Amino acid sequence: MSINEKSYAYGSSKSSIREIAAYGSRRKAEIGAENVFDFSLGNPSVPAPAEVRASIERALDLPSLELHGYTPGPGMPAARKAVADSLNRRYGTSYEAGDLYLSCGAAASLTITFNALVNPGDEIIVIAPYFPEYRVWVETAGATCVEVMADDKTFQVDTEAVRAAITPHTKAVVIDSPNNPVGVVYTEETLRALAEVLHEREEALGTQVYLVSDEPYREISYGKAIPWVPSIYDRTIVCYSYSKALSLPGERIGWVLVPGTNPEHDVLVPTVAGAARKLGFVCAPALFQRVLMDCVDVPSDVQAYAENRKALTEGLSKLGYEYVEPDGAFYLWVKALEPDCEAFFQRAKALELLPVPSTSFGCGGWVRVGYCVSHETIVNSMPAWAKLAESYR
Ligand code: PLP
Image 1 (cartoon, rainbow, N blue to C red):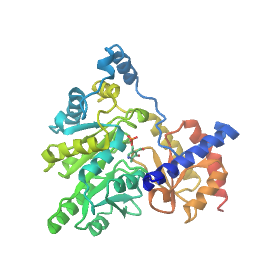
Image 2: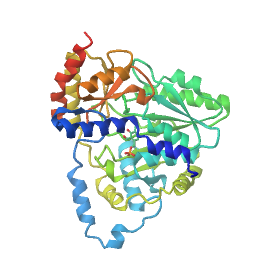
Image 3: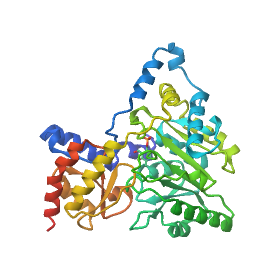
Image 4: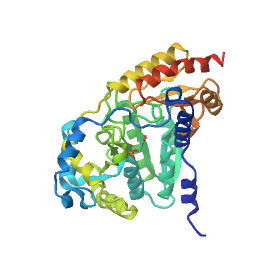
């Protein structure tokens, strides 16, 4: 049988994060959910806001064809306008409905964007540690995925390392702030330094380098301002999703924004639409396009994550663990207690603790602890974290 070998490979092996989550579910069935501390998946533990339910209930009264019919490929003009107006209120911009392409979450937004930008031979830079699906999406779009390590202390973008990695083939740099897996927020200073490097290299090489800003965690921040990237670098495309902001990961709704200030805006808008068409990612879920019209300004409820973050960081700190102070998202980046993070993970697993080893994200020495779980899970996991630390003494 002649099939696509790459697709077979992607489909027949799960991502390591999903492997750990599947193990967690099996283990919970064996020994009881309360005895397994699964910190693997980024599935929001906070319920979707009441406004989402109210919006869905109102929509259900619409005639069926209106409710369930196809929408225009890029989304309903009113939904796109609602998003544009909301961005304009928040960031003082002047975006229009036509600058937005509604999509099935950040996954589709990124895949569409990579397919809009890439030609054979192009390279896309990702900042390691990084969300592992980036590699799949970049390679599937036909580009080479080039990893550039973040600063090993602050985990901000190492702008000098980015400078060194840019070649005449570099098409884009992908950033993700608040960051999965580390939880850092890129400062305005970092972003300005990155913009300067990109401008400098563009000029020296006579090329154009895009900044793809992946922002599913924009609303999950613990007090730090999250700079608006297109105001810092003009050749930015923003990929957004409501998976975490409104706790709607299963509903698949997000968008791609080509800001009017992007110098290639007029060509990029139809190219994004063309990439979506090429991939069959047209017409995002109609019901959730309607939900956006009602809920685009509903704030994210970060209180529960903030409480989890406090309990986890205080608990682990008392036990002597080192971690990167998380300013956003819902992940804690914890230093493994030995250089081999896989071996550390195996010891954790034997104590029913399930973080994700950092090798999944393109570097060694750490684990990611997702704290989008119940508060009880964090509190009850502490004796196991204590035993794990004890086993290294
Ligand atoms: N980008 C990052 C950094 C993520 O963490 C995720 C999901 O966890 C995605 C993209 C994909 O998001 P979505 O579920 O909206 O497709």
